[in-house]
Image (cartoon, rainbow, N blue to C red; front, side, top):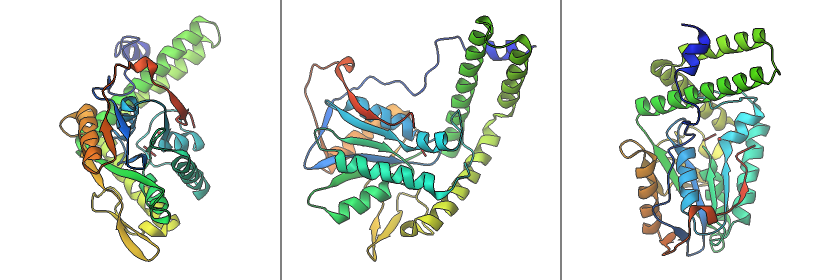
Length: 296
């Protein structure tokens, strides 16, 4: 079977789902001074999709930022990856600075939904600095490693299919030669063949080790802390604080179930309330989305 046939037979064009598509089952608004929520989690647990789903549930305008997209863009990665992305600390400093700006700018009426591996640390520091003015929920999302790897494999294969269809369009338009098309198609086929559950589990484990080692050197507040543990803590101003006040899982109900659970837990801590509304999804506005700059 040709490489082109292997690729084109895997997905009908138009069927791609970039995240587990969700219509908001409940519209919510932030209350009691809460400015939004940060969402952290290990690679491929569904943090980005959860952030998007929560964004769709917000009543009115919101700020949305997926820090991982910023890191991938800064390190030259075109597609989602479970591999470690070597970089200097300036890339992470820029992401954290943007997180701080968003939290400062957000209000309960215009909340911030921030997806980022260590976004909770910045949110915690801002809350402790001015607790009367700033409150932001800090959620950790978890998932079984095999399920996370399966999600990552599916996402990578979808990315490959999307790139293949783009190549088909370029060939039809005469923007690339037949030889270039064949070479690039073979490259995509090789990546597809190497994208397996076992290899992806190894990639995720290596990335977690490398990421933690990197952050421990540049963020002393979380030195030697496993930030993917719901009991994770950070030392701020000489005192130890819980990094998260909410934990949800995509293990059984997927992103849809985690969205419901996150909303319920946000209600429990007094951060949000339900809003009876006739608004449709088309009426919702995201006033700032930095995803073009993913979970880091």
